[in-house]
Structures are given as structure tokens and as C-alpha cells.
Length: 444
Ligand code: SF4
Ligand code: SF4
Image (cartoon, rainbow, N blue to C red):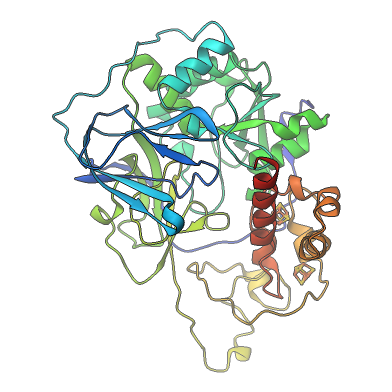
């Protein structure tokens, strides 16, 4: 693994949106009902171990992954299983629990020092229902417990617009991050901590436990996949595991207290000036208790890489950002007179390219789909130096072998190529779908 302390890449994609969450971190009480939603666990094939009306306690197993039978997802709160929600083909989508704080949580053994071996750490994580927070490159799936990670990437920063900033909550979680890193050290000698060079955080405490790399570039260079792409000196690292700082906090607190840690830090954005902020919430919280539905599209996760929320308002497992995006198509009168001054634009055809206006995020395409015009913008912004327009041709031709040779598996699914494409081609979604299909074929 290369050992730079800093990765600096000239920024070419400088977007600015209105609605940035305030750094103030508010603590929300547990909602009367919470939901364990699988919206962000696409690779899991769930097998329930509870039924409707069952009483469950915080930390008790709810279901396991049939393809990874040691991986369980546990209840974040105590209460009664109110409803099991199924989607198409009777796929489990959500387990709703009516909370009952009078029921004590499940008590695990307290681990005041890190386990002494990788096997012990894995068993402790599996027993406490924490494994499902891991992800593995290149398919962003949950790794198999029997495997050994070639490296672990810890994301201390996700500078994608509207994501939580570690600096907003650092005093509350710094010790837990240190304890979490000590636990990870038992799993793998190569730990890489990726931080945003533009965020003011003292990383000295962690530099003797991990390789700390500050990234000074567009936001999409801070993802685990992009960091590995810049740092790897061997293809072994293509299968690195990764997690974010919230996972370190969760494992440190669960190990130390013996109680399943059910608190996470999230941001709400694009909702209203008063609501857009950082929040400490209970996992699976009912968002309608803080942000009742409005006439905007809700997005789970980042503005560029997130997923459109369907009917459910329960915070899905592993989601730390919730954004509301305007869906109205506004038609302005004689727009050519404004020369696109208020329009965020990657292309120099509009004044917005130079003025960098703050605009509310919107789903408006500002035009319809066209064929690729070979402008090369997608290539310019790609953090892993792919040629998305060429890759798309292979994907459309169903030539997966050539697509892999063109770097399909390096694609971090950052969504930026889609955003800059003047032909409105949803490149990122097509690469994601092809990777998902490939993963399912390989693991059928
Ligand atoms: S191809 Fe697109 S989605 Fe994939 S890494 Fe490059 S810019 Fe991001
Ligand atoms: S940005 Fe869109 S139009 Fe331009 S080369 Fe890429 S795919 Fe083609």
C-alpha cells in the first residue's frame, strides 16, 4: 500500500446547494414506533426469527442473512413487533416495532479491552449483531465472516453535499473512535483512515494506529473505493473492507457497555431552514416525528449516491443522511436572457459555471435524454479515471467481460458522471445495476 499522508487533486466539480444542514447537533427522543428497514441492505436475503406480536428486547436478533447465515440484524429498541412489511414477491422490507422502554435491553458480556485475536473480534461482532454495518469492495456488499480483509478503510469524512460532518460531533465520539480503531487492529494490520483535508480535525491521536490520509479533492475522491484506487499497489486491495466512523462508535460503545448501541448521527437537509441540522437519533426512527411528509422527494443517503425513499419513513439501517429534493419543473420566461446565471452547471455554456450559485437541489433535468455527444465531461469528473461513455457502450452491449476490463469494478457509484452529463444519461445507475447483476450471478 502506498503511504502518502495527503492526496491532492485539483477540484473540477464544485457544486453548491442551498439547505446545508447546520452544524448544531440536536438529540431526538426515541419515536413511539421504529422500523428496521432493509432499503440499504440490498445484498441480504433475510430469514426472520421473530413474528408479528412477539416481544423483542434491544439487541435481540430479528433476522439473519440466508446467504451469510452467521450475519444477524438485531433490534435497536425493546418493544413489540407491530408489523412485518413485505414488498413485491413477498420480500421483507421492514420490521416495525412499537417501542417499550420499560423492557430492559439484552445484556452482552462487557469487553473492556479489545479481543486478543481476529477470530474473537469476529465472534464478538457477530454475536452483538454488528456485522451488517461492514461493507466490502468492489460490490459494496457485506463481507463473509470467514474471510480476512486485505485492508480496512475507515471513512472519517463523507464530504458529499449534506452528509454529517464529523467535526459537528467530534467531542462526543472521539474516544469511541479511538477504541473502535483498537478493535479493528485485531482484524487487520492495514487500516487506512480517510479524512477530508478541508475539515478541521486533529488526527494525531489516530496516526499511530492507522495510515491517516487527508484527501484534498472533489468529494467523490473521499469514498473508500476512490481512496483504495489511489493508494493500492496490488489488486489484492480491490476486496478491501470498509466502514465509517459511526461503526467504530457503535462497536466501541456496545463492547464497553454490553448493551447494543442504538444511537446514530444523521443530517436532515432540504426540508426547512429550522429543521436542517445534525441529529443524534435512535436507529430506525420514524422521521415523521421530526419532519412530517412534504411535497418533495426524500432521498436516503447522499444527494448524488443516495437512493430514492419509497413509502417508508423509518430510517434504514446504515443511512446517515436524509435529503428532501424539489421535484417541480419550473419554466422561466425567456431563460436565455439570464444566460444560466442561477443554474449550477459543469459546462461553460452557462454563466452558472463561473458564478457557482447556491441553488436548492432539484430533480429537474432541464432537458430531455439525448444521445451521447462525446463531450468528455463524465471522464473529467470520474475519481477513478474511467471513461464512463466507453464503459456505457460495453454495458449496453451486455459485454460484461469488456466492461470489467474497462474498469467497471473500480466504479465507486458516486453519481457525479450522471450529474454532469449534458445528454441526461444515467450512467451511474446503469453501472450500479450491472455490478449488482454481476454480483448476483457470481453468488447465485
Ligand atoms: S464512472 Fe461515474 S459513478 Fe463510476 S466512479 Fe466514475 S464518475 Fe463515479
Ligand atoms: S458526459 Fe454524457 S454526453 Fe458527455 S461524453 Fe459522457 S456520456 Fe457522453
